Length: 316
Image: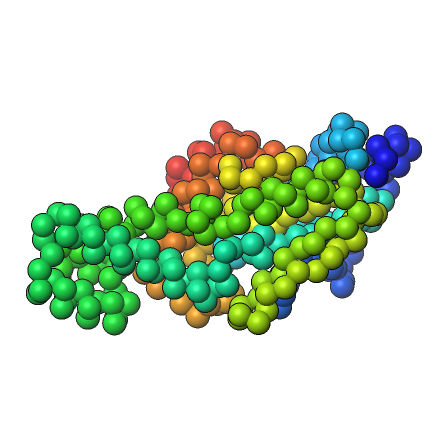
């Protein structure tokens, strides 16, 4: 791939927002459904002119004339929809674009990863009770009942079972060391894909991970005419992989994220105590990484500075 020629850069005036959502291509997660609404269009329309300007600078500096954008945020915040729109806009502006879903790169399919998350939490919780010297046959029997009721992560259950506070603290700490970390996500593979792309590879083998054991395979994707790689992923702004040029954070409070998930109801347990804990930990990761974002977009569509973002989250 030759270095991008100045004449190949688009004129920002050539891009215009779509009048309707239309049939816009979306990310490469098998079976994923993208439902673009007016809110997604508004967010994409506000950020894209600024994003295009920043991307042009990256394209000029990269020897292969390529740029990597990531759209990150909490579960259900609209990453897939917004990333699909931005990718579509780049293509409309004359820059070939591809949308990659980071949800293809956990080390386990969703069913097994959910089970591993729960195992990590419960195993560390029990060990926390043993270490604290409060584990005994009575506690073990009560805990078994709480497991069966899926109430062991519920803070409200602590009033009836005071020892549960020790269990939850230890379990949550272990879970925080698993979620969004290399034990859960294959960041090395994402780093290698980004490296291949930015080095000008014409073809890259990309992973496809559905929701069952038989939906795991690789596909050779043609990148010969692709200038922009858009990665949509909760962990898109993580410190554990390298090569992203322009991170975009779609902001949401934990309450807004829970509401999004409940509306979408992808996993059927969107308001369970354990899911709430997972969302809170993921939110903490997003906040820790937010300072690196080139653009932060509020739920309203407003572009926030990092200081405005911090003030907004403090109020929530």
